[in-house]
Length: 277
Image 1 (cartoon, rainbow, N blue to C red):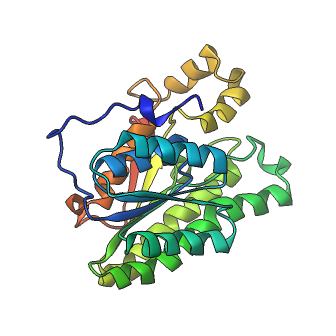
Image 2: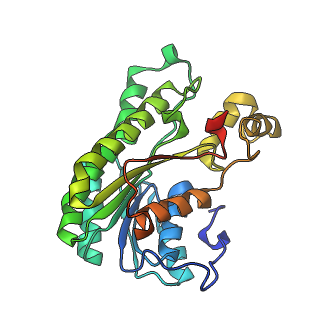
């Protein structure tokens, strides 16, 4: 695996509080990219983490590397399965309760980018696939997480990873934007309904983040990972660079923590200022 957990710098002791100590967090799409960065940060903040992904080998490698890191966390476990399958959703919630005794946090990160395509060139099959992977699992996970969080007492926090595509138009990304817009809408509707149970629901809307998924856009512009395409994207970002997966992980950890105890229903741009343009 080229991008390993061991490449992520250990936090210095005393550099921050272990805000997620005693909490159990489920992270989907956790084998690599943003999901892995979220899982690492949650573990570094003291949480027990259930990592979920359909890529069983990479998922197992990530879990083993996390175990090797040690630190302040209270344990890891994994669930390998297709997030679009309801049985996988049930299994990950059960894993939190049965292996770690409770559920305090859920990060709905798993998703696909789909084809970068003109609106009329998308097929019905692609439409259905985008719904089944990017939207339906987030709804199902929130549905099953609610009673589990209530059983654990003290409420909980749900973080949905949407996208800046949920908040602005992007040529060639109509179906991806549609699903992420729906995830954002689910977020503030669930936040309204779940608030009385002390369950907070928020969405992160990343801009361009340096992951394999962004290679699809780079390829569409001017060749995969080419300097030209990356420069063109960077020109749209006031901070002048791609975000790092670890920067999304840091925001997710904040929203999961009690430091964000009065924050719910937000769609938080993490985009280097791109949405200001």
